Length: 329
Image 1 (cartoon, one colour):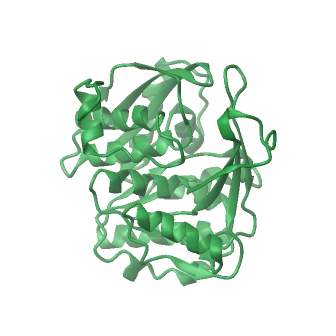
Image 2 (cartoon, helix red, strand yellow):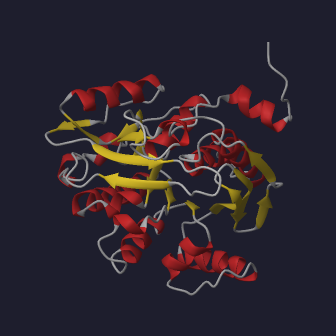
């Protein structure tokens, strides 16, 4: 089960500038919904808890998510508006840009008391949260904390993607304590060294040798934590980069081989696809080697899929792992 805002994405077609042409491409997505979609595409059960407006945009969003195989029985319908974001994907040496328009959305205005977590979490195998949700306002922040606390009381594991987006926070001082509270409930953390430095209030100057020190610090600070997963990206252009995945456990580390990706179709949602791959690969035994392999597979495959969500299924994942590139007939 995931909890977070579902957004309408409006993007410039053909890697053009926003409004360079009269039309915009549209799809629905969001960090947490993308993780649910990635898991559902692999045949795993997935559900979302969110709030959507009672209008045609909300109806369309609900239909889109249901169409991905995600259980939407926990979705609230309320007064308000749909959260939006606008995307300029970038091209060549022109970087991409995201513009959010999500203030006062149905989700941002949702009362935390509307979410009955003991009921919503009944039967859930895992709760997945991200650091985007507490940035959206007091209501979402309180709801996320209650969700994590209730999951802990019910013995349901929690995964947390720090997903720090500076532009969403009202002030930089507000983020660390709220993010730290959610990380404290997690057994799986998605965070790079900069994210961990934010959580632990330590400096990170970018030196590789400091990364494992920060990982060790996170394991010491958060007693429930069993796994920390992260990606490494080295970009040479908006549509060309080298990537790898690292998964740390308390007793070891698994690192994927580096892959070079060219002719990238869409970079949005790639980190969410990685999270879905890691969670599916970990399984109940917390197999960090398989988690790194599956995380890399979905991470790379999502770069070839337009839209927010990874739609890669198990056959796509297996073909990637076997390095099969021929047309399947």
